[in-house]
Length: 139
Image (cartoon, rainbow, N blue to C red; front, side, top):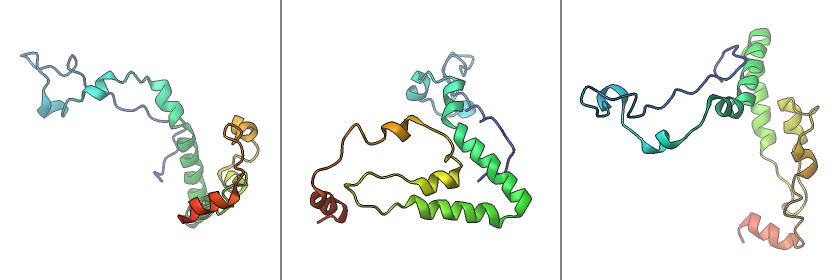
């Protein structure tokens, strides 16, 4: 948890391309800009995609920072501990599963997502609970 009141995620640093990091000879300057990576040069990821990917994490970080400043360090530590305990969901493998406890602790209990309606419907329920238990227990 990084204590900050940032409301919007930061933009990721742009990767260096050969055009932007060329020295006087036209070659990539590794000492000044670091090693060149073709994979990062080919990724055409704009700022909006990176912000949307980190939106919930930034909002959660802001809430935890405000909770820490208001109630002390124990409050976000306790909340993170409760989230970790609830995230380990011990359920029957063949049965449909939801994690309502984690949704409540994350503050998502009053929102409706497509996963609330369509979650798990693409594969369908398993017909053999014994096979699923054997997979879970590695028998």
